[in-house]
Image (cartoon, rainbow, N blue to C red; front, top):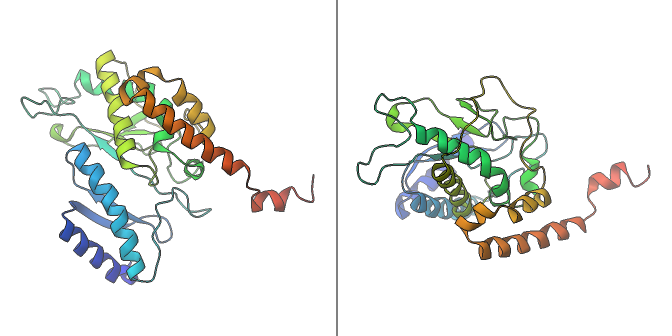
Length: 273
């Protein structure tokens, strides 16, 4: 990591100058892969910060003669890059976390929120994995989520509940990729929580064992768009006109991808079929 020290120091300087509230910046498991943590706060403010941070990192990298990418899966046989969202809900009057009861244990709204996420996140997948490459990240390795099961400190499920105090009781949505628009990824997460609270949705039992081979999420962009187009409750919250326009743009991108003949196809099919 020491080779990146000048780059990191300049990123921190720029973040200080523009008021980005970042916590830690560390090396992750992949080659040249870095993790940045933002302090918790208001959803819209954090979306602003995440969006501006991407621009800041890209420009800083260019200043140092390197390139930064937020592509979900830039390298084969390396971990993909995600944008994990930690979500809690505060009571507007008391300021207390509604996910925790008086005794510090999980309150009913906590389970309703998880139930909403489990019910509706698969239908909003296209907003969290918006590109063809986004689905490369969701492979059978590197703790990438492929389901909406939940568990305590379990990194093989899509919804992880970190261990902590009652004040920090929260649900981590591990599905969005680093390539996702932070505004849309946060919006669809909160929409699912809202629907779960309104419907008093039931959550499944927490998963204790690893669930690497449990698939309950769409496997490609076309399948994700199919689900989004049929998700009326989610469309009602996000706006049907927006969802329709988003779907049209992404369908065009998916069709454009089908026109490309990949190196894999040439290597394995060209002279063998």
